[in-house]
Length: 201
Image (cartoon, rainbow, N blue to C red):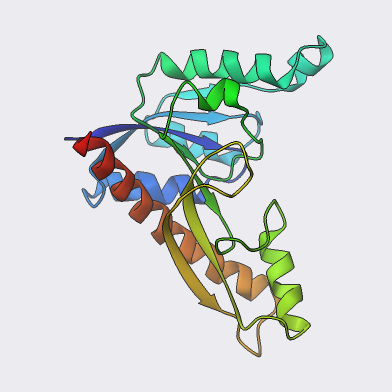
């Protein structure tokens, strides 16, 4: 059975590309049924179009300018996404925190990729914070994980993770490159596991 994915992005979409490639080669028994971006110029939208995947540009700014809440935005986004009948929502570089107004429409069906290990470096600066902690001698490695999304940021049940050593000669850029390479593996592994869980229900 091939599950339908809605992949949310805000930037270059390198993790989306890893998902598209895995699906195209059959390593991932899933189809990208929709790619959502909150940024019009996100290169991930170009990646999606090249792969003939439907896209949805859905910005927050018009809601803010109209004085509408994040909950209204999230509820409308959920309505639009639901029309594509996704089995799983994959946040792959999506830079918005989704409220229960969205999450309650897709219970236990939203997963997120985060560039830090469970319980460490919550939020958008995970890579930088890990590298700074290494430089202070506080840690010897960083990592990345994919987890189910709950209202608390980066706190849901972990599906897959990878430990990434920080090497003596590393710069922030070289460490970040290895984190992203690991993320490309972890996100595909997590989607496979999440889809297997869905199939058992």
